[in-house]
Length: 446
Image (cartoon, rainbow, N blue to C red; front, side, top):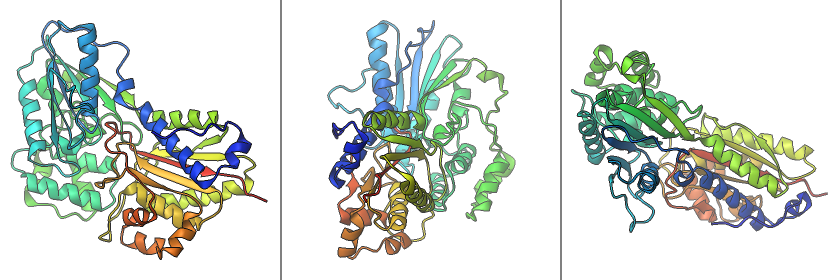
């Protein structure tokens, strides 16, 4: 954990060294992640135990932490009430304390971002668990980002290799998450409300940690317990628009079947979704911490999308304009989920690609420092959460022979910041509200 500098006046912040400025940015990122951890998100009141059983299901990078928090509260307040269940999370994202696992809720681990056999097993077991439930039973679904891959069950006639290939193509072509999850919902036997439909007539409560811009609950983990307003034709159009090769079985499925439960389906009338955390909550925590340190904050939005490097370049130009007028320290905060069109064979995720676009455009402008991370602790499929840089790192990069444009051309932002020694490695945070970006702008020195 990084400690926030004790300075609390604009003058003291403006006089920070580059090392202190980076320490400040790290402390703000820590505050943002801490604010959306499941430990602090459980609803104030647990649902009353039903006449029948209570079954917990769930998927996502926060699923294990959510299950631990829920079970702990349940056992503290209503230990005699039955509770059982099954959730699946990413490899390495299980309970933070291996010595204190869940007693009643089983936690599985599977692959992300590409589903594997355990993703399929987890989905199948959840469907089998909810199907016998009746109207006296309750399902609590713990849903967070990453659940689309972690709980993956192809519909009849479509094999897992086809799902994996389409998932890979969508991730590499730069498609926004809304489009990716629309396709996923219509090529699934469990997403798009199908898990809830299998559980009815049991009542389904869905608790979500949102990682999608706009916080539409039906998009988080492709909405396994929420009805779907899109159509198979929408999914087919997305694949065709991005020029993705469509296997015959997939095309046939989308043209003839693939319909998900609709919002007007009467089975959903007693179900209730609740978003427990979102990107705006993380940004608000960082804003409060920054203002307590004497920094003015400007929010640029919690739902920004688009090509990662282009957003970095745009925000660099904004930062340069802001510094022209700044008379006191200013912090630019933003969240959302960008995308990367993969053209090279380098290493990196969307946050380091954003940051390298920012770095390139700033050209080492004095007094501007930045950080970008994925709040789940994993930027793309690498081992880092993201990276950060100080203004003086441009001169260091030149001395080391690191050309930002060359690294961007091969999508190799990870290696660039690795050689600078600026990667941020946190390990799994066990939450996920997606990108957190912060640019610290200090007034120009006369």
